[in-house]
Amino acid sequence: MNLNFDKYHGTGNDFVIVNFSEQGKNILNKKQIIKVCKRHFGIGADGILVLLPSDIADYKMRIFNPDGSEPEMCGNGIRCFVKYLSDKGLINGNLVKVETLAGVKESNFYVKNNKFFVEVNMGKPKFEAKDLFKDVYIDKKISNNEKFTSVSMGNPHMVIIKDDKVDISYLESRGLELVNNEYFLNGTNVEFITMKGDNEIDMMVYERGAGITLACGTGACASVSALKKLDKIDFNTWIKVNLLGGSLEIMVKDKFSDVILKGEAEFVFSGIINI
Image 1 (cartoon, rainbow, N blue to C red):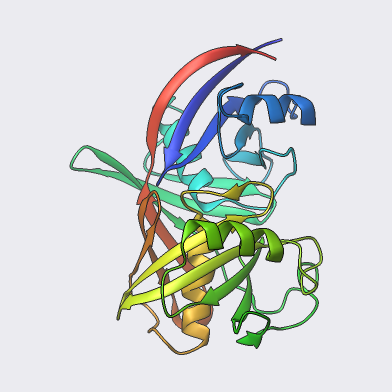
Image 2 (image 1 turned 180 degrees about the vertical axis):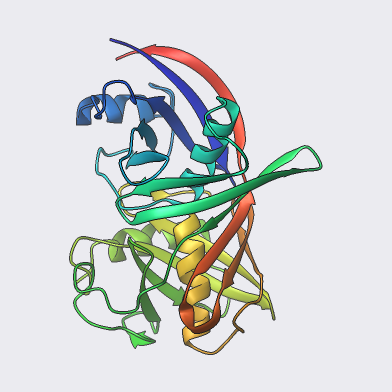
């Protein structure tokens, strides 16, 4: 089967986007997803985004990890998805609602200095999510003299604050150790964050189903939410999150009512692959 695709990235988090709106369902199987995402042998991507029709929003987005699993939400992915919709002329105006497994997410977009920015309302962060983690964990002590806070952004996150930024070797070994830990029901994304200033942090991420990635939008939202839960930042303040692939801006609204994610999205290339 020949598959038409477009590739986009958000802060270095890259995605293959395919339009199955006419079919009405995803037609890619696990083997095909793995082939498409595999670097050097396929297109190469941190995931596949599938465009589908929606009965409750403008469009529906399904997300697939490089291992074929399906996460609930992806903050960088939805920004790429919105740019794709804009590039294809599928949006009227600059607002769009996208259905995901984590609910309907409302986004607006704008162009500044020839760069395409998307601002997404990622919804309410949850510190109790019985479908994702076993208990409420706020500054929970674990091994390696570390503490974590669990946060749901529709998908699970384990946020660990470090005094110093971790290196790649530690991220890989510790991330692999923690991604399927005893506190989470179906695995988790693992974020290591370091305070760089009053309103700026560095973040490294090991993603469930993908491993080390250059960025994670939901992880950035979860990390900033955890910091507010620990009273280390203020509500209604933009926090700059520095990742391996660039920077995002995150704001936690009053009483954790919403988390706003802002960042760029960029088209890479289009093509056809035989799968």
